[in-house]
Image (cartoon, rainbow, N blue to C red; front, side, top):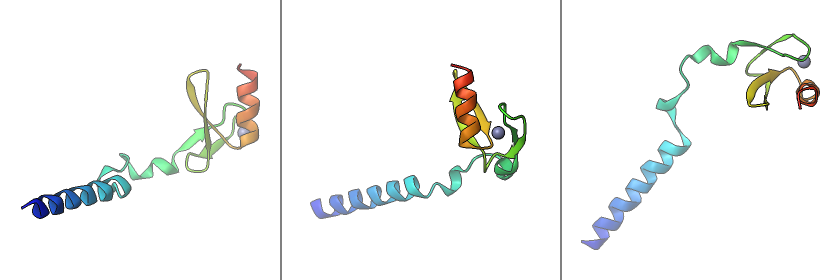
Length: 78
Ligand SMILES: [Zn+2]
């Protein structure tokens, strides 16, 4: 009886692990979200969100074309 209980527990943990590491049904809404263009507030160019570097400056999340722009912008807005 206790073995059955243990087996059930193992199965439950396994399902939990699979759901945690493969959240296939939990994808972001809108498959094109990564193709969305975002504006770099530092050099004012548009970059695809998937390639952009996101950084929070003064509580607001911005997207940048490069680490350099992210650094420059955050230094300007300390
Ligand atoms: Zn830039």
